[in-house]
Amino acid sequence: MSHAVRYSRHGGPEVLEVAEVPTPDPGEGEVLVEVFAAGLSPVDSAVRRGAHPDRWPVDLPALVGREFAGVVAATGPGVSRFSRGDEVMGFTDDGAQATHVVAREHEIVPKPAGVGWEVAGSLHIAGTTAWTAVEGLGLGPDDTVVVTAAAGGVGCLAVQFARLRGATVIGTSADARFDFLRQFGAIPLAYGPGLAERARLAAGGRPITAFLDFLGGEAAAAVELGVPGPRILTTLDWDAVAEHGAILVEPGDAIALARVAQQVAARRVRLPIADIFSLDDVVDAYRALDRRDAPGKIVLGVRIVGYPGQRIREPAIKEQDVTLGVPTPHEHLQVEEAVPPALADGSVRRRRRETRGSRP
Image (cartoon, rainbow, N blue to C red):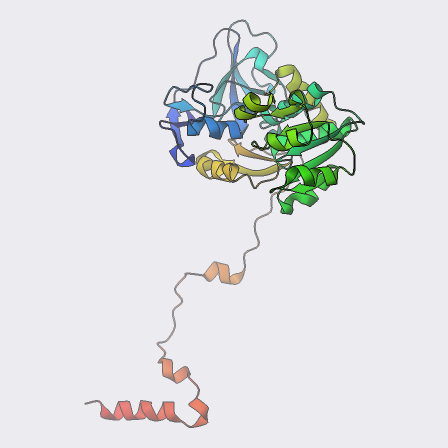
């Protein structure tokens, strides 16, 4: 048997549960992967809430998660590129947030040795979406691009890919993430009203030629900046597609995933991991994701793994931590005996003598 995250009704993170399910069997051209790490995505939350049911139909109960990394546990008939024990990373339609997942052979790629499990398991959606956006726009040194939610998983990778191509990048985020964005070469810009005018000032007179709205709802600012519809990209804002002619950008295929993974392995780009939660803490993981206040990606660590040279230290325990809550035998103490005479007038001792004298 395996364990998988699922939900039986639409709603917030509280509808999620970890259920015991039969371990799936790989069919023709499929691979069974024992999952080590699985990434979380805002799309997962949108589907769980029941947003756009016409575009994201769900049959309940539904499984959760589309990206993962792990080790091949079994292969189905016709699989030729992978064998049991291979370290892989990839994606699937659903059910990646589980101890085991089945994926088609063309949906997985070898995990580069230089990419950690947590990054590998959360790289497909953020990595290939950012890669597709930047490559599709053909950004270069003459471009100035605005990236909203630039400290998020997709955003910070898009910033780095755009900077690698020589573009000037203005990234929106909370004030607390400004230094985080500067590390990737972005000009930080706070969320809030007047985005178009503030972005124009940040650009220093350069025309803004592209707008990557990974936050959603900011396409109007892009139009105000004079960015044409085909150069306004979004991941979740369907209204912007209908009203402004924005382009919906989606995750790429395994070829794009392999290219992004090689960029990470070569240390040309970094995918920061904001936090790692256990499978049992999936509700807390999605609450953290939905708050959108974490830099980088949030990951489910399905299996604990070790790395060469890793040293795990026990936490330092103070003496008070050891004895806290442990009853300590001692002689009974009358409270007033430990109280100093009030103003040195002996009133406390006098009251005690009077009390003793009045007892029968």
